[in-house]
Image (cartoon, rainbow, N blue to C red; front, top):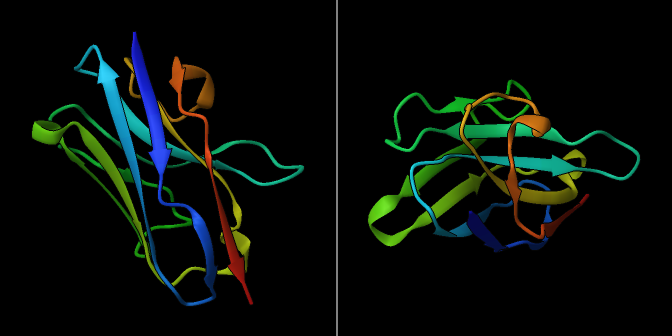
Length: 120
């Protein structure tokens, strides 16, 4: 079992930056990921990183703007988001899983979500 708590969401103007944090606790060794879900849309993966921090994956929609990183020593996961656009407005979720896939169904554990709103 692993518990996940996100923080760092909020309201920002277009072109601004935010850094989301996720504090996993419990069992270790999981692949961690960031997803988001906007109203009326499916939950989409943004980035994924393995337990060792190697082979980070970023979705094309955020590549070059968002960066995932993890600090295992301090049990933290981050998502640095730069050059935010109104289309990035959504609830952002931290997730943990074993298989390391790209689908939401492949991640067994989820945080409560944090709202990100980007104004134009």
